[in-house]
Length: 334
Image 1 (tube, one colour):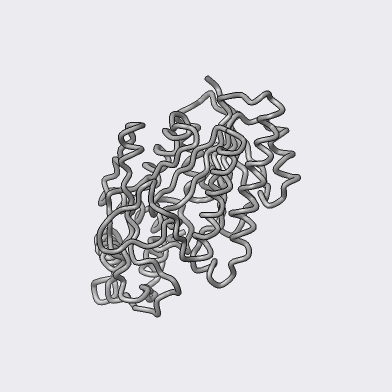
Image 2: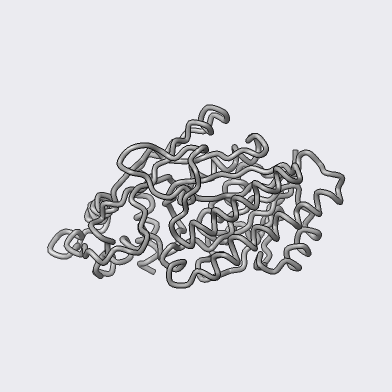
């Protein structure tokens, strides 16, 4: 069955990978990439789809409700997969206002205008709104335990607070209006096309340029890492088969301290590039003052999506890290 889907934030990291995944897997789908083209956006990753009749792009800021309404009425979607968000924690600490506008007001605008579109079409059951969120809404874990869909929200940064707010907007539209809505909360993603400000690209870029590699605090913060392709497959499964009104956590069973991950990236750089300072890129590591409200550990229990939908994390972490490093080295070499 052909679908018309709006992907918000489709010029960003996860969004662009998702657009490519959907176009490849569903050749009869029509995909509209809706993105405001902020500093973190880059359409070049999708250059190969410019001539695809089933793909189109619209530059729209979801904070502009009139534009959101206009594009929904023009494109006539029967689904929205919402990834557009301000997402860099450091930026949310230094300037939180854009995060609450984009992540809370923007999500409200999309949900509200999609609700009116749904009502005007006599509430089709197959119309679906999929909100993509983060594990950071749950706060910080200790040395043991995992986030589940039942974990209480406890956001600790303006970014995570704004994402928690957007999750609650979507939840309210399910319980109040009985719309067909789903939410996914994912762990840290890595892979090609991630913006330079994030940890893994930052390490690769600085190492390649022989600049200091900054690590917050002692580098003992722990994150659960998920290859972006596996995340896109999870979004696909939940959008098509997830139960309405449900949350699904998506994680990689792949925990690393920041310091261990940086050491691994340096080892891969030594192998792939060579020419590290004094023979080893680890010599560039520099510890810097920890950021405010830095959560100690994130780890997700993805049992629900595994058991209900059959999704499995298939990443080969070493192979995928090498693929990621090589992609960035090629980019930084140009």
